[in-house]
Length: 72
Image (tube, rainbow, N blue to C red; front, side):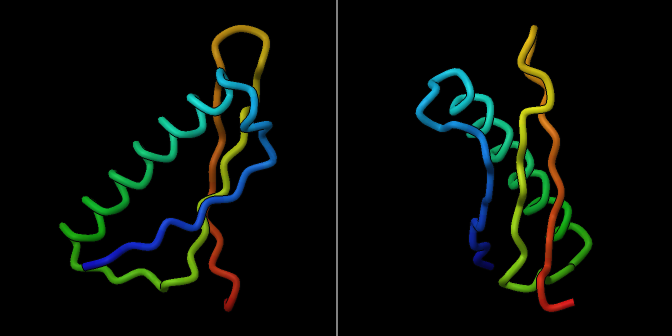
């Protein structure tokens, strides 16, 4: 089973701190998604995109995310 990683963010990925937060967050979310879809025998459309953002930059970074499937 292959999952394509379509990820979108407006975060400045040239900022190392923000790059690490986004990369680690995406890895965790996509890993959880793969496990849950496999456990429940769900097939996701190939055009599903993961949207990531950093909500708070003051102290510890907090990230927000959602999935988009454009056809529907």
